Length: 263
Ligand code: ATP
Image 1: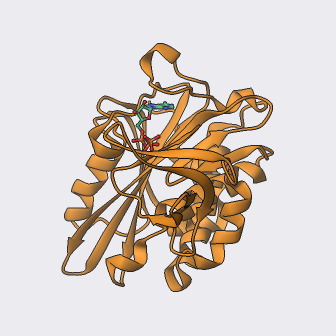
Image 2: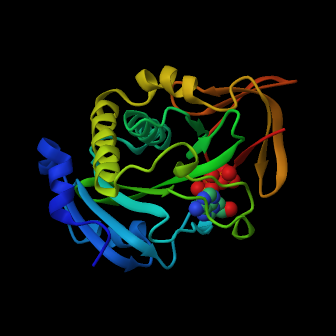
């Protein structure tokens, strides 16, 4: 039996339940990979896959995402995008903001955002990754299908498995009940996507900046391990690109194969 019971989730979603079609699994390779397959078989927008275990959970550039059933929440949401893919810039930042809003509504006010796609614990407890977002796209004749994958640590994974420090939500306070947590995150995701669809990232940018962990701090941007740029981090612009104040002036970077690190 999966940890998520669909009737309890429906209750927790209340009136928002009609916007989602949820499938809960004990195990799968990757909720994003499986949802992309279902999207190709015409699954409706609002389809959600939540899995206790992922045997091949993934991050950007083919890297892996670690999770374990009791200590993580991993799920993916299918959404359809009627417009040009260029207007999707900033979506993973909008998703991060939605999750931070949802966690704040549950009493976790100290969740920060790192460009372009991470949830971070920040402040006096140190800096460590609390969750990751992986947005993947597939096009068909109906438009663009957007698969939004979320991996959230409820408790921190073992440090030896990871390149960078990781944190768990339990470090910030008592963990919410799992159905309430998933329902709250889905509700905030849908509300933020509803706002993103007509207006893009621009109206969300000021709030993203307030939650951005490295605003004004010296950072470096890496590409395949090499330093691509360094300077003071000015956060994201209205399209979701990264702004760095470098010796050569303000430079703008799209979220491609680059990684941001604090100096
Ligand atoms: P970068 O910091 O380089 O921009 P990213 O934030 O894009 O990376 P992702 O590709 O989203 O990273 O996630 C994969 C990376 O996250 C892996 O390299 C791994 O080190 C780390 N990671 C994997 N599982 C977890 C986890 N449960 N908690 C925290 N970090 C993790």
